Length: 245
Ligand SMILES: N[C@@H](CCC(=O)N[C@@H](CS)C(=O)NCC(=O)O)C(=O)O
Image (cartoon, rainbow, N blue to C red; front, side):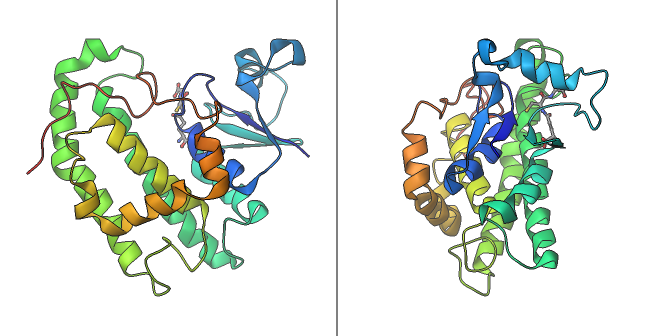
């Protein structure tokens, strides 16, 4: 069965965390919003699910995944569903919850990254909340980013199996998500992240390892990997970025 991933068609956004897992596993999937309307795809197909008056279990927002009749929403929930099927999660049920806890921490971080450019209202343009965005970003860069990255660095360091993976001794979907976090923060805040690799060496090593996985490397070089842009979660507004001590 082909997995159907539903997400906005022109950004990496939150959909990218799911996409990386599907790509690493070589899964059979389609990115529905990016497909042709002539085949019943496109952004309209995504809205048709969200605005359906008859389908059960409709999602409020993308990303969501369709696997046959099943509709699964929220990045962490989608990855918890897909992880075992794609060989990117542990066998043990309890351990899957530990992994989910790590992914939910990434969900929290992603929300805070989003709020750096939209601190007041999702429905308003960045340009309408620029002043607040500046204050919010300064707080994020000074306190929140180090707290989250320091946490993940410690989890890597304290992994009893060694720091190559965030959990256990095998690649999981959380490793892939941490790669994406690293890439996104470096894109959005090149000055503030200039010393990221020295400060968080295990995270940096993980990023390097993930980007050279053959399937990931092939994906990153493909046109399926949309470049970061100023409509996504990780946006580069030079006026928000700053040097860090
Ligand atoms: N908690 C959800 C967040 C979903 C979300 O905020 N999706 C965004 C795109 S990245 C959206 O389209 N939101 C529309 C809305 O909230 O009205 C997740 O982790 O997947």
